[in-house]
Amino acid sequence: MTTYLLRGVRPLGADPVDLLLADGVIADVGPDLAADGAVIVDGAGLVALPGLVDLHAHLREPGREDAETVASGTRAAAAGGFTAVHAMANTSPVADTAGVVEQVWRLGREAGWVDVHPVGAVTVGIAGERLAELGAMADSAARVRVFSDDGHCVSDAVLMRRALEYVKASDGVIAQHAQEPRPTEGAQMHEGDVSSVLGLAGWPAVAEEAIIARDVLLAQHVGSRLHVCHVSTAGSVEILRWAKGRGVDVTAEVTPHHLLLTDELVRTYDPRYKVNPPLRSDADVQALRAGLADGTIDAVATDHAPHASEDKDCEWAAAAMGMTGLETALSAVVEAMVDTGLLDWAGVADRMSVRPARIGRLEHQGQPLTVGSPANLTLVDPVGRWQVDPAASASASRNTPFAGRTLHGRVIATFLRGRATVLDGELTGP
Image: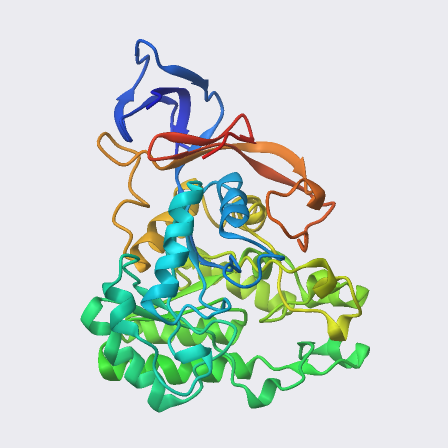
C-alpha cells in the first residue's frame, strides 16, 4: 500500500501539521515529518476532516441502474469527500431481506470507492403493512443497523411501535420519513404564499411535524432509538428540541438543499427544485440552520436522489421528486453554515462525519485525526471555487439543483483507509 505524507494540512481548521498515512492508519502527526518513499501531498492551506459519512443516499441499484449504480454513486461520494454512505432501501427489489442488503453491500465492496452500508426496509416492500426481516438483515454480512422505508412514511402507529421495539435487540435505529400521507396527497410544493400564487397544491408543514411528534413519544415509551430523516420545517426543529430536553433518544438530519434553497425557486417551474420534502420558506431555512448549529439537528445527510433524464426533463407536475447531492454537499454546508459563522470546521466534522458515524454505529468512521485512527479523511480547499457542471458529474444522473452555480469549499483529496480515491481534485480509481 502506498504511504502518503500530507504536508502542512490543518486538522479541523487548526494550525498546520504533517500527517503520515501508512498501512491504512494515521501513522504519525507532527511538524516536519519525514518518510522514505512516501508520496508527498502539498496540503498548504487545506483543511483536513475525517472522511464524511452520509446517512441517506439513494444508489438505485438493484433495479434502476439507468439512474444510478452503486459504482457511479460511490464515485460521486468519493468526489464529494465521503468515505462511507448508507444506501437507502427503496430499490427494486426492495432491500427488505438479508439477500438484497448483502447484494448491495457486496457491490459496494467491489466498487471500492467508499464503504457502503445498506439500509434495510422497515416493512415488506416498503408497503407499510408488515415488518420486514429486521433481525435477519441485522445478522447478515451487511450488519444492517439503520432501517427505513424512506420515500414512504411508516404511518401506522402500531407498526412503528413494533419496529422500534424490534430493533432494540441489535442496537438498531428506525429512520423515519416523516410525512402524514393524507394531508400531502397530490401536493406539489410547500404550502405557503408561493404555492397560493402559483396555484399548486400545498404540502403543509404540519404533515411532517405531526409524525415527528407521534414518533418521539413512541420512542420514549419503548426506550428505543429514533432517527428523523430530512427535517425541513421550523416546527419540526422545535419538536426535536423539546424531545431531546425530555431525554428521548432521537436524532435527526437535514439536507444541504434545505439549508440553502427556498420555495421561491419553484416560481421557475424548474423540475430540478422538486423534492420530497419540498423546499420550504426562508423562515424554515433559518430555523434549520439554527437547529444544526445548536445540535438539535445532529447531522447533514445528502438524500442523494438521482433520476434518469426522462423522469426530470418534463413538466413540473409529472417530474419525479429528488435531487443529487453527494458532490455538492460539503460546499453547500460551507456556504450555509461556515460562511455565516454558524459552524466552524470542527462543527462541520461533527455534523458530517462524527455524529453520522455514531448514529449508524460505524466503528471505523468519524474518528479523530490522531495517531492510530483509520486513515479515512478528506482534504478541502476552504476558499477554492468551482462551478457545478452536471455534465462533469461522477453520478450517472444530472438532476442537481446547483447546476451553473459557483460554490466554494472544494474537495482536493479523499482517502479511504489510507488509499487515495481522490487526488488533486480528481478521482484516482478504486
